[in-house]
Length: 272
Length: 98
View 1 (tube, one colour):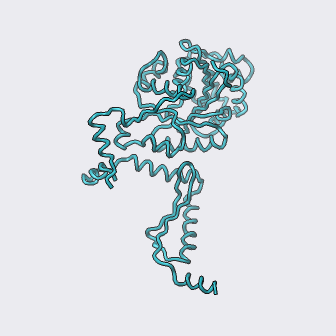
View 2 (cartoon, rainbow over the protein chains, first blue to last red; view 1 turned 45 degrees about the vertical axis):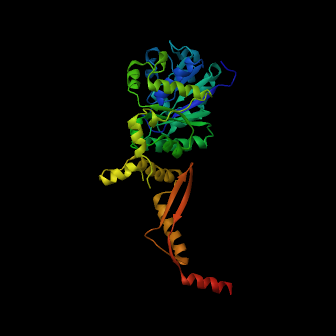
View 3 (tube, chains in turn brown, blue; view 1 turned 180 degrees about the horizontal axis):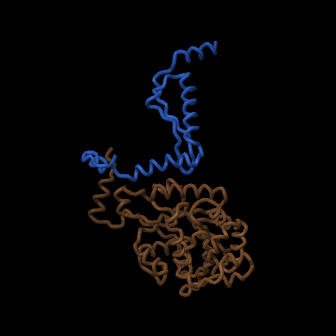
């Protein structure tokens, strides 16, 4: 598509269950549908799930393990998405790989993938141990996913500290599972609270959306087939911003402007 | 204080939790980022107070030495209300000059 060199982007969070893999799957589909040749690499060798979210679990023949061992070619291991041919997955290998996998191995895999794609998304495992360090070794930039909860933000901060020491740049933030009503009532950390604390530019904001569970059940990411749910739109905007487009971020607390929103605003006025 | 805080207080309700969350996070992150353990901070606080107390009389109740963090940099902030300057400190200063 473009002549610019391929980008390798780590998707990480520290805490588990905040939406790393969901973001990787949806962003992968969204980028691919926008014409970007995208590879998604499941670097969570212990608890792999990216194949499941993409609905590709039954099409895996070879994994990163066979590629590294030289027992198959990269093209044989990469699983191409049927509806979105611009997207391909390199599945994680056997969990036993964790015993010997080194940062250099991940670098080797990514170097093999890079020539064929515009963007390589690396889905990191939770935590800040070896698995994370291996995944980070192969990345040039990063997206940190967090939710507006104290534990997730604290863990994200640890991860950002580690990324900083590795000269990974830029590091951008995706705030996931935002509940506008709670935020407006000041019962959930606000968008600026989180961006102030973590001091990262905000790449995207994804509202809590039940459809995410439905799409996971089916193995069809929300962004597939032009899905219109709020989260699908948010993921597509993230993909566009990642390519340099300027798309304004909505203020979640102003989403339903009505009498109630006005009253809520009045209640937050500083009186002394 | 916001209008909501006032109403909450008048009705005896709990105040909104987000400001509490932010405050707690800022404190815990200041520690996480600096890698200073609370014990070390406590010792530092004690020694700082000892040094300052040589010169001025402090209001120990109102004082506070803590870590604060902004834009990913951490600062040691000491807030030490002074009751009065000690006479002995002024005397040593005068004798030192003469």
